[in-house]
Amino acid sequence: MSSTHGTLPLKPVIRVEPPGPRAREIIERDRRVLMQSFSRWYPLVVEKAVDYVVYDVDGNAYIDLNSGLAVLNVGSTNPYVVEAAKKQLEMFTHYSLTDFYYEVAVKLAEKLVEIAPFSGPGRVFFGNSGAEAVEASIKIARYATRRQYLVAFLGAFHGRTMGAVSLTASKPVQRRGFSPLLPSVVHVPYPYPYRCPFGNLEPKECGDAVIGYIEEWVFGKMLDPSETAAFIVEPIQGEGGYIVPPDNFLPRLARLAEKHGIVLVADEVQTGFCRTGRTFAVQHWGVEPDIIALAKAIAGGLPLGAVVGKENVMTIEPGGHASTFGGNPVSAAAALAAIRFMEERRLCDRAAKLGEKVMKRLREAMESEEAPMIGDVRGKGLMIGVELVRSRETKEPARKEVAELLNRMFKKGYLVISAGVSTVRLAPPLTIPEEALMNAVEALIEEIKRLGKH
Image (cartoon, rainbow, N blue to C red):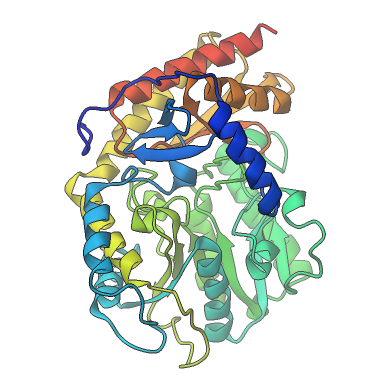
């Protein structure tokens, strides 16, 4: 697939060893004025980005393998998105959708209902981020059911605002120091085939064990399902380690939700918009959630979040929930352009095809002992996890090695990040040329081999 911006490099171009002098100066200024409540992967200071290439302030060109945290599915500064945003900026930049009306938000809502992974009529609520979409989903589910309890999963990441972080169970640092959190939240294991929480089980058995645990131990001994408002689940866990559940898990969870009148909320903030080879990840398993939380890639890099839900659950009365900037007209116009680009360029099919090729090569490296530190390769489309271990027998996580690997890849000009305990995650723009992507994969394998020799 040729870039929408013309000819771009297929490999990194490193002119100054990063971080260069300009980058170091900006990083020092950052430390003085920004609250350091977030941790950066490595000292990358971005000046501009074009499609799948990121340029730093010292003139280096990097190949993007994380899409700005799975946001830039259509590539950076996508011409469709830029043109739509410019056009809207010249018309009006804001006029609170929660208090008035404008058509571009209606058009986007109509489009989202059209492509939503459920049948029948739907409604949309707009916010500004994934955390806002999750917060809205909590309120919508509780309001629709008049129930209070929420069931979430260990390893999940749903955001860092107080309601969203109450569902999050990915890393202790994300919750430490903020209690008491939202009450009436119960966490249960997630079926992690490579590290099944119930022992060394086959994937299907692991999925069955999780559902059995909910039915027997949670609903049987602690929580009456008649008081449960929602299951909130990532169809593929993101921050938890790019974990693809067994094929039986989500269909069984959906049936359990239907049996007890529980709202099924799919958090597709990271998995949505062709990332996994389908428009939404739940479509891999034929599951129809009641509510789907969206953000990240929805607007091609502009801030926007959305909840798309079945009409019968989207019932909060006027004044019950709102967001001043939710559905901002510039972001809405950008989102319409991004979705149109995804459809016209068949990015879902492209992600599926490239993802298969990448995973095939990584599994070859694992199985041939070319890269013995690779313990597991998993994913859907271009949402791929490569779990590194110190020993395949013990599955001891290679925590320090992954941190070293990310830094080495950065120095070589590849922007890779991790997830879970020791999983390298690959989530490049879906527009990345095949040659550039496979060059990156070979560089990754080479660095993993080098790590294994130390």
